[in-house]
Image (cartoon, rainbow, N blue to C red; front, side, top):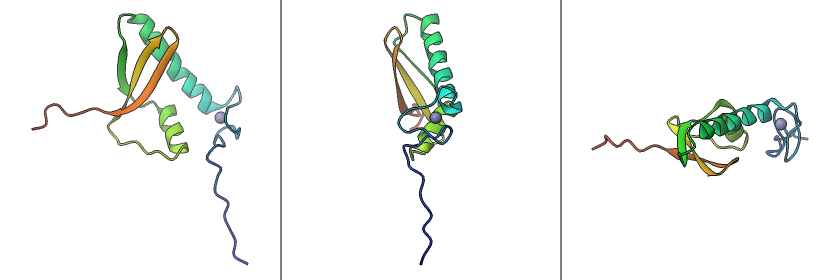
Length: 100
Ligand SMILES: [Zn+2]
């Protein structure tokens, strides 16, 4: 009988093993919270800004790879400030405006 290697469940967190959510001590979740906290700090520091772009953070990259997404090397994150404490993150590619 052939051996079948089970494939990991894409919804099971690779760090804490929970489905659909993370444990409080999950390293991946803590990394994502740190990124979100840093974005929140940035918008409090620059309250007149509606959006910012920044490189993809390590925790975001790990989350994308867990979900089967391999972003291009020059991908960035567009963070839109919707309301105080409410932000949206979008994976974008920055256009090379110097290209002919
Ligand atoms: Zn987790």
